[in-house]
Amino acid sequence: MTSPAPVVLVFLDPAFPAGRLADASQPQLLATDQGATRGDGIFETMLAVGGNVRKLQAHLDRLAGSALVLDLVIPAEELWRAAIETGVTEHRATHPAPTAAEDELVVKLVATRGAEGTDSPTCWVQVSPVGAAGRRQRETGIDVILLDRGYDSDVAERAPWLLLGAKTLSYAVNMAALRHARKQGADDVIFTSSDGRVLEGPTSTVLLAHLETSDDGEGGTRTVRRLITPQLDSGILPGTSQGALFTAAKAAGWELGYGPLEPQDLLDADAVWLISSIRLLAPVNHIDGKEIGTPALQKQLTAELNALYAGIQ
Ligand SMILES: Cc1ncc(COP(=O)(O)O)c(C=O)c1O
Image (cartoon, rainbow, N blue to C red):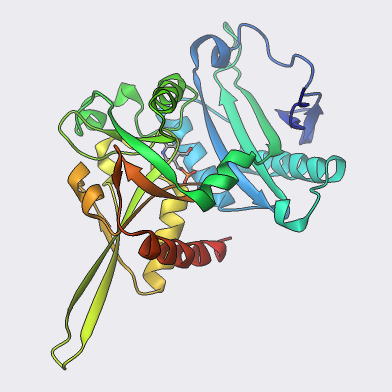
């Protein structure tokens, strides 16, 4: 039997300015917490490398944005920062990584609407090691299937109560889509809208690269490299990894584009990735069984984007 991964929990608690460490092997939540009974709450998942949480401000900003959408009043940013520091320090002290290359931690922030009948959110930070599967998929790439999410691409604006642009705890649908993919022999999913637009993965943002070589008018050729992601107003979560990578790629000479994208654009791309904070860039090898791009070019572009991403703090 394998032992569970070591988890450190830190609750945000007014009596503990640096956060209150709690035993992850013991019950810590009331059974009436609306995070548990209704999935009513928000979260963030961040990566700490060598003790440094990457894109921390972008995650805290998105947490604050999700809280606003859900009318949740959550503790101030400094309290989250202090609890994160406590959790990461405690995890690295009590469960040091065997090698520097493995010193990667998942840092999850959770805020629920709190116990029924109270008006007080329950907030905590959870720190645990990065799973082997995600690390592997960065190298091997993934096979993906397209699944209809059942909403059109205008629904986010028309029906804001669906909370589509917020990172809510209601991820049962996303997890069901992943189980469905695994039953079909695939690793992951790209959701499409009912009007045929490419949206996002259940836990990731879609990225594609398109290279266009043309005559430079002086007897040579010139290649325009474009990185494209679906447009944000189609009811998808704004990815902090995609945002940071776009900034770095622009500085490195890439052109940037924002949808609308259709499935055919994915099939015609030179490379497609699912990008997220923990797994980072996962190259997509096949979509619905069709090979994407060429393995050599995909490998080269992935290495280049990984190098750009490595420079992001
Ligand atoms: C639905 C969805 N889209 C995109 C992402 C990627 O976001 P980030 O790059 O900030 O991790 C996530 C992350 O979990 C997600 O759940």
